[in-house]
Image (cartoon, rainbow, N blue to C red; front, top):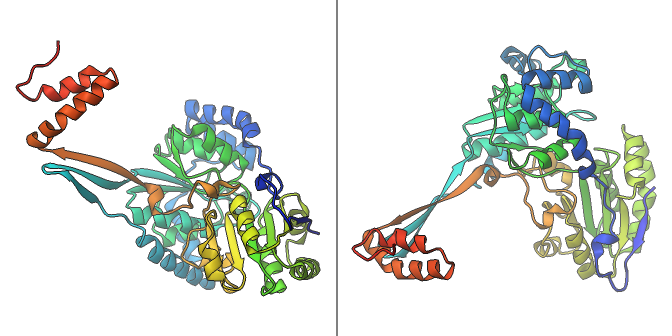
Length: 435
């Protein structure tokens, strides 16, 4: 069901070349989304509605979901689901509220200071996927950090669903209602990203778009980056687990399956020092997979080239492997798990020990589950309050402080053959200004 890679002994020079990884050809998708985005740019809401009819089979009178439908979805929500969402929101707010940044003023010289102000973007578009699964949790993960950052205008979009009268799934609408989101659009795919990037008669242009999506959403983000800010090009979900002989194979198998459940191209990778654990997990997987609702999807994901068990000689080698892999979600299930986790450098989120499974992070840990995929955790962070903030430097110098800096400015301006830079400073004083 799952392949095995033996890296015991010396590790290869470029680990990324030998580790399992889902293939996501965003470049190939670019050419398909380019005309979609251009159509939205030129024809606005009419193009969005026509594209929704073509791809989702839904004819929309308007992309915007009526306010009464959002309220009705909350009224009809299962009380147990409502309670779970409310607790998820509460925990997420606790974590994200502590991420707020404060303005910092540095006194560079007497009379000269630089203040770094943190200012939220003005308007954001928040994408919530639809399709194989329903993701009200992604509403929470998008909306809470935007609200805690102080974003004044936000809109959620999620694909129109035939089964729900052309609206997004009602649980998504209910989550929006719980969070006080009043603007929701029934639009998915590349056309949703273009709607936020260019604006339409029904949806004002946004400064940034965030949230996970399929390859078409990722391709549109790449194409339109610059016209609109993005968080990341989210790819297929992935889990890596670093484990030794102390780990429970039942837990390991269950956690691999939990992420494989998302998609046939979801990645599930176990990195272990223990052949016995690898054998036990392989033995455990078929029974657990057979007992799940989405066994065919999970089997395909676990059997794919993006999943596997990697054997390593020791924990040091295991850390090298997981840092090279840079997983979206990384579990550490070893002896001294906290100490091992503290040494990891590349991961979207780290889950420590047997009682912090990735599923907890998906819903209720308080952390954010919109995380970098495809190895991007080596240079990118997950969604947070900082995603929605911009640092602005405010420079405040007195006449005396500028006079002290003037010779240095002139020297560097001359060195760069930009004499007008120095002249702009000297013009403020009774000094000779070169003609």
